[in-house]
Length: 204
Image (cartoon, rainbow, N blue to C red):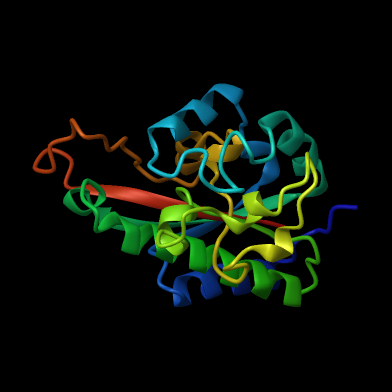
C-alpha cells in the first residue's frame, strides 16, 4: 500500500537532499515518471555497459520496473549542476559518484522516516565509480541464472542502479521539476552549453 507523504516529511526529505550538497530537489508524483524501453539504449554509450549487476542487460528490465513502480507514490528527484567541461572529461566520475552516494543516503533517511521500501536511483554505471580496480562485478560473479544475492555488492552503502538502466525518461522528469536540462555529448561545446545537470532520485 502506498504511503501518503505529509508536508513535514516532504520538507524534511528536500532539506536533507540539499544538506547533502544537492543544488535543488523536488518531490514529484510517481505519475510523472515515464519509462521507455528504448532509453536503455543510452547505456550502450557508457563505459560500464554490461559490466555491472545494476547495468543492462543484467539490470531489472524496464517492463519489470514499471510494475515495481506501482508500489510508490512519489519520487524525490535531486540535481547537481556540473560544468560541461567536467562532464566531458574523466573528472565526471567525482560528480556521478556523489549522485550515487547521495541517493543511497536519502534512501536510508527515507526508510528511517517510515518508508520501508524507499529505493535510490542514480546516474551512470557504478562499476567504474566504485569497482574500477576489480576485473568483475561481484553481483555478476555470484549470479545464478536469474537469481542473485544483491547483498554481495562490494559497496551496498554507496552504489545504486542508474535511472537510464530502467528506462526512465530523465529529461521529462527534470522538466516536471522545472529544470532546464540539456543533453551533453562529445559534440557539445562547453562555451555554448557551459553547465550540465546530473540527477538522482529516491522512490518513496
